[in-house]
Image 1: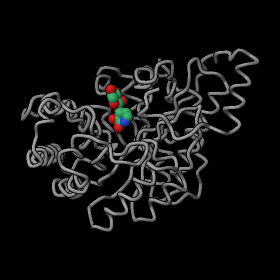
Image 2 (image 1 turned 30 degrees about the vertical axis):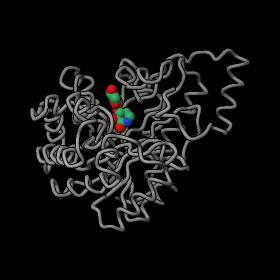
Image 3 (image 1 turned 90 degrees about the vertical axis):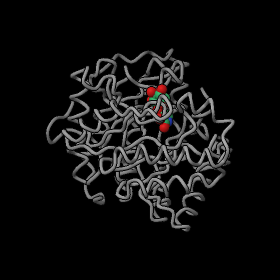
Length: 366
Ligand code: XIL
């Protein structure tokens, strides 16, 4: 497992224990794929989520969009918000310096508009998926040059989409697991206040967009969550225009399910909105019945947490089909993390999400 996504601690609960006992005694039989009935109309995920004002979103792979009718239909019918999985990242929109290419992202924004969906913009300031020209010149940049390049990027991209983006992930993954700021190009060249600066430039570029800090493993208590809390508290104190914190929520059945209800409530008390922005629940393949129930718990509990926290305005899965998931490529031997299987048939996980939404009566409206 790459260090970048290693969760804070091992699952201590009964499920993992049962899983290992089952595996030892029974040889971990593979689960035969079982299909679930997909909801439509008033029982589609987006309709059920709308009853509490929650937006339910998905990351979208724009290679599939427009090319795969079933993929389009699920994206359109089940979700009320979309996030470009890759095409708003810097390497995608400015492959050559000064040559902006918004074509793929524009298509997704048009799809969303046509289907009355909101868009989460992802992401402006990150250490990853930078264009090669920037990686090449990075080490030789002065502070002034780096500042100018980052400000220009935010202006270019947010200016292009002005008025069309609901939430923007302005800064993504700025912390290490130990709570220190990640030693990225922006920290090296601009210094720690690149974060506050980015939010100020973002607000200037699109004053109506909700501006988010987004990260992984901050769902769990520990130094990374504490550092994030301290950062956003300071930003609020300094009147930096930040609106929310995004909890990526990439879970793995071998670890604890985080207590996102109390965590998001804690951040909400600072006057911030929250969102679960990249939910998936990976597991070691092949999936056993025990692991599948752990996956159901992962989706259900994180969704319940969002429903129970009024400040949690969206719950977004990081793709819905196992065939297009990023997991197998990054975590060898793992997968089956999504609500639909490789053939885009709804899995029992889908039903779990649907049931949580259906039975969520009396949760605060947002
Ligand atoms: C991932 C995409 O899913 C992959 O297709 C791509 O190759 C790498 O990036 N955290 C994030 C997302 O903020 O942008 C990442 O998306 C997954 C982890």
